[in-house]
Structure formats: C-alpha cells, structure tokens
Image (cartoon, rainbow, N blue to C red):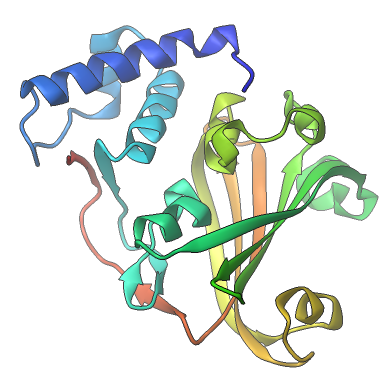
Length: 241
C-alpha cells in the first residue's frame, strides 16, 4: 500500500470523528452537522471532509442517506453503491469472490468528444457466488491525476472507491441507467453463460466536485440475484456502529 502525504488531513478528520463516535460525544443515530459546518469546524476543505466521510462509511461508522436514488438489491438486500459493488456485496454477508481480470491504460480517441480526454484506465472485475459468476464490471477512469499509475501500483485496500478518493476523485454528481439487455459473446464467455442471455445492465457515470469526469461503470448483473429498487427519502448523514 502506498502512503500519500496529502492524505494526512483526511486521516486527522477520520481519527477525530471516530474518537467522537466511540466516546459517545456523537450519540448513535445522531445526524452529523452539515458538510460546510463540519468542514469549518475541523478546519479542512469540503473535499477533504468528503474523502474522510467516504472512509468512515467504508468502515461502517456512518451511513450516507441518498435522496430519490434508484438502487439495486442482491437477494432482496439493498446494496449501497456509494462504496462500490465489492463492499456493498460484502456487507450483505454473501460469500462473494472478486476476480481482477484487467487493469491497464488504453487509448480511446473515440471517447474524447464525450469526456474531453482520450487516455483511460480500464478495470474489469468478475464476481462469483461459490462457483457461479453473478456479475461483471468494467470501469473506465481518466488516466490523469495519478490514476495513470494504477496498473503499476494497484488499488488501495482492493477498493476502487477508496483509491479514487485517495487521488482526489470524490463523486458529487452523475446518472445511472438500468435496463435488461442480452449478453454479447465476450461477456457471456466471461460469465459462463450463453450469448444472448438476458442480464440486468447498469451504466453509471459520475463526476467529482470539480465537475471532472471520474468514472463510468458498466455492470452486468445476474437477474436471478439482482433487482432494481427505488428509494425515496430525505438526504442526510447518520452514523451507526
């Protein structure tokens, strides 16, 4: 694991909030202050605060509440995609094995009009439940800001979400399309299915707080396990044990 000096402030915020939660200063279920207020109190930027909150959510000290978001469930259990599919599936208690199939940079000039750059980092992962492949994920990220070195350094803690945050890419906006579509020959082979088998397809594009493109993820999900679920509610931040 590579340590980056610019993570010091983020880690200080993480340590401070963990101390407050574990000491009872922040009671269980009590909402945290708003981002601007909390960033001002801790004397950090909102970007650094969001990176710290992402780390706290990964460690399950807090839970972020989304507003009006379409989400996916696995065997009836809601998946929190803010932490990525791997962590979301692990949180269900399912015994999921994640396999890294590809991590490399590629020149994709045809995508320049859409994303404003032509060199990307491509990550392909497959997930299995026992011996059955249940999902295939292709992530497209900009080969800039240090991300171009990922094929050499690998992911931090095997988490793409943590890695992106570590390099300053914290999601703030985007969209997700979910549909049913037939598997092509290549994807069918990787999933051990027959070409043309209908899977649930999720295509999510996210941008960071600076409006920079940070990731496009195409996920193929076994419809025997995954379903779409619409969640409605107020936006906020709670913490939990």
